[in-house]
Amino acid sequence: MVVAACLVFFLISAHGAKLVAPPAGPGDVGIVAGRSPREILLHVLIALAAVIVTGAVLARLFAFIGQPPVIGEVVAGIVLGPSLIGPELSALILPPTAAPTLGVIAQLGVVLYMFIIGLELHADKLKERAPALVAISQTSIILPFMLGALLALYVYPRYSNASVPFTSFALFMGISMAITAFPVLARILSDTRLVRTELGAIALSCAATGDVTAWCLLAFVVGVAKAEIGDGLMVAAGTLAYIAVMLILVKPVMVRVINRWQMDRLPRGAVAFVFVALILSAIATESIGIHAIFGAFVLGAVIPANSTVARTFARELEPLVTVMLLPGFFAYTGMRTRMDLVGGWNEWLLCGAIILLATVGKLGGTLIAARVSGMGWRQSAALGTLMNTRGLMELIVLNIGLELHVISQTIFSMMIVMAVLTTMATAPLLRLLVPETRPPASNAPGATDSTTVSPP
Figure (tube, helix red, strand yellow):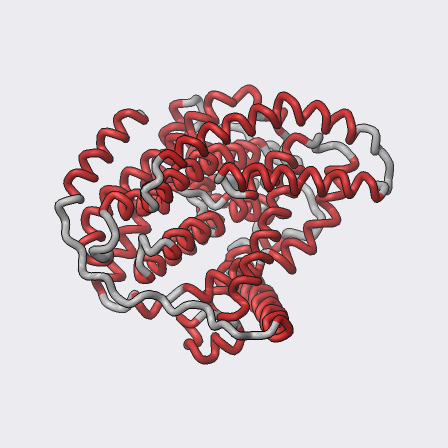
């Protein structure tokens, strides 16, 4: 399957190299310089307050129509951006000078949140399905990736520019279609009370495995864009070495050390030990090139889920991270989204085609692979629906493509629409496929659900 995909992409690249894109336009306006640290801090605080309040209001509105609250938080950043309320008003709420600091806050929030998700992952439920998880996750990457590369044949001569090689553009289109929003998927599973179920564990593991592959591909794509192809191979080798070290060496040590702290209140030394381990693991994966969030998730996963450390950190960190830190990333992305560039019928028809192909590739690929692996039709469709979730990871990939000038702001905005709509489709479809799923509005803080969703 991988060899066939490589051959198909080679044919696409050979044909696309003959296409001619429009001439390059003026570059994006950079961040305004010359602000004092106090002004930047004030702007960051205003931006965080605005996106938290807007996200809370929209979360209630979306919960009323059966959507997980996280959708409201994602949309809040776009609502406060220049696309809907205009550049002047948006600049007062989300000043451009706050963008770098907001980006750092956002990354910290995502790292901590993925650590919490790792703590709540019951890996013992997944051992019997390990081969199936690998097959499902890789199929859910390859099929949408190839569809994205095919779509690039139409998009490149119309919405790219001559300074971008077709191969780089096609690779970014493919990876943008293939990514799954690991953190947003985790939030949806938590909001719908499925995070502790068998289906939730399978979905998280497939998303984690697939996104590691996607990040290796992204590193390769960035290397191609920068003419440093060898970087992608180094990332793949470093990822395998990191996972081996974490499972073979780090996990036994963590289990032995953490089992000493089986008390109601953790000592300060225990808290410091866990945070240092978290930072070191995040540094390791960031240095490799697969993003710090995977280091945070893997460290959380190697800590026993029933330990005092796991329960304490999950309980104490979640309110701060989900309410205070994560909205920063949505605000950061909203500042860069320009929906006014998607104005004509041609743009909206292309946006619809992107949504359709992304859904067919991700949901369809996962459904087929899961069914072949022995899962029932209903559970396979539910897993495909969950894997079709996009959002945070999609936004990260798109921001990288925009920063490298591989994709234009028009394509960036279209992909944002695709990410939001495919994520919004997850909860309604999931309730049809999994009747046990509870609506987000009934999700009380701190509630848990240990119901296991078994194949029909």
